[in-house]
Image (cartoon, rainbow, N blue to C red; front, side, top):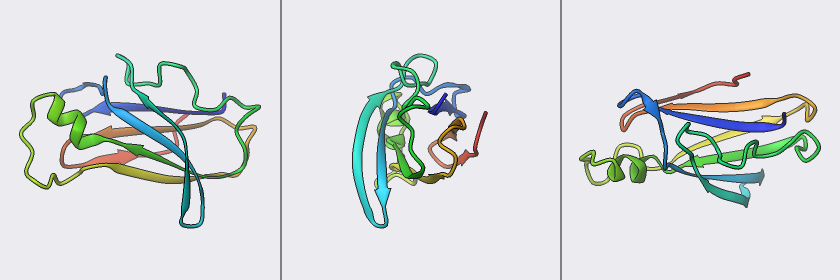
Length: 117
């Protein structure tokens, strides 16, 4: 299945529909933008996996979630600057034949992630 992500808004108990996410490949401190997308009503990429198994390569990646903009668009009053602006998750893919799922559980004040299934 390649690489996928899913975002849940824990403040509202719902998928983070409308959140903007960017995917990068990384090499040390250098990052190259692969794509930017807006999450669908289920909190997922509307085009399906970010990479399928044939396209996913071993290496390092970064997902950047535009958390503050998402909550501001939902009418949440945030301090300036917000506690969480963008959440970046750097992760590695060791086995490109495996499925890598990177979920994000997020509120304006906290987040959690893990390697999902």
